[in-house]
Length: 221
Length: 221
DNA sequence: GAGGCCGCCATACGCACGTATAGGCGCCGG
DNA sequence: CCGGCGCCTATACGTGCGTATGGCGGCCTC
Image (cartoon, rainbow over all chains, first blue to last red; front, side, top):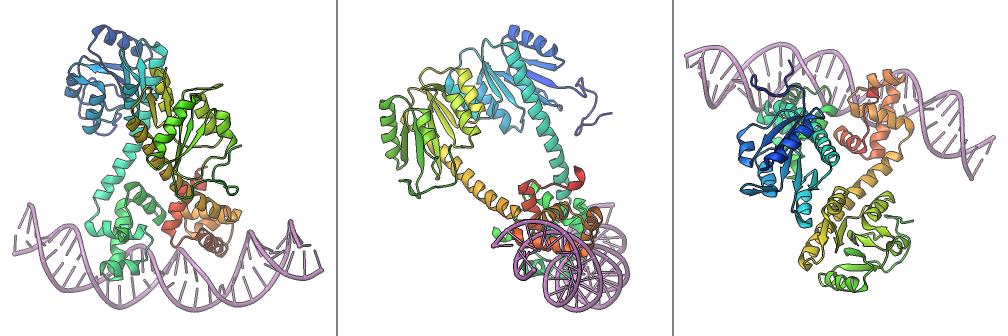
């Protein structure tokens, strides 16, 4: 069984697929986009309003969102920000029938993958969706690695984290002992524990982990 | 050919200022943008055509380019790509009187800072320019640091680079000696030379430099 | 051809690192 | 209440690291 992250139990979610989430209040548009995406082997979830989307959990596979700019009750651009604020970082593709340039620029600045004016060619939409899903797949790979790292870091005690920050800043055990006000031997112990818990096989690895975690030199703060 | 970063001799260039480069075939627009930017203490260079811009060296201070999409002889979007291909990475702001959404989306995807439809408010243009110059200033700071680093790395001998890559991968001197087929003492010497030439005060520093330089574990290639 | 740079190796010393062994203190939850 | 954990310290040993000293050969350039 494939376990990506922490899947709970048997939903009807695809295990090894890619999902396109469509939000549009026009049922005809939803239907035609649905068949378009299914024709290229993508799983589709259709919603008539933003609220419906929020009521369901975000898919746990590489996916993206296709949004009409004009949504019932809220602007698509505002909804984009709302999703980001809620921790949903799926790539967004906009489509619109009555858009203008400032609107498209604002959407792109906010990180939209594409902004398609209706009528658009099916191929343009497919290209945008494929690009967005690829981007999301990459983000998920990076996120998985980082989550793992953060879990290990969280298992460190306060002292171990403190010592680790000095170690990865390049200080010797003796210097660290002086900075914190401990004996050198104690520093060595925390250092060894940190290395073991972080699963670092060398100082070089620990430094790269600290880099990825954003751990900085304590003396510069 | 434009050479960005190698200042030739005494132009009338400002030493501590910020520059806005304007390219528009309409002399009236040029004039009004010129006075707009000067009013907020920005230095301005005005050009009637892309060719005129290419004939002059790019400014060596934080700056940006304001382009009309419709230029004499070439599309502003194509010109944007042309500049990037020529190694000029100044942030670009587009303005247009007859633009459409696909055009603006293409420009933003290509990295434009903003895309303003005429008529625009002066304040919107100023905001865009300030943001672009800030972005360029940041890029220059990063570039300067990286250039420095690359210069030091280039001063290493082949052996020193080789040893450095193994060291920053986390191998011990003994292991490196085995991998390359040298004695441990020789590895130590190259390692020490690399540390000195790279101006690294600790292994942690060297690892971060290798990271920034894209130096990877030789065993994984 | 002589000097300079690079590369290679050896012995040796001082220091740093990692860990094992052993002990003491305070806190918390079973 | 006591065991476990975090935290601190000490002595001691083995190993790794950095460098100094000294020596050898190849290549290029002046």
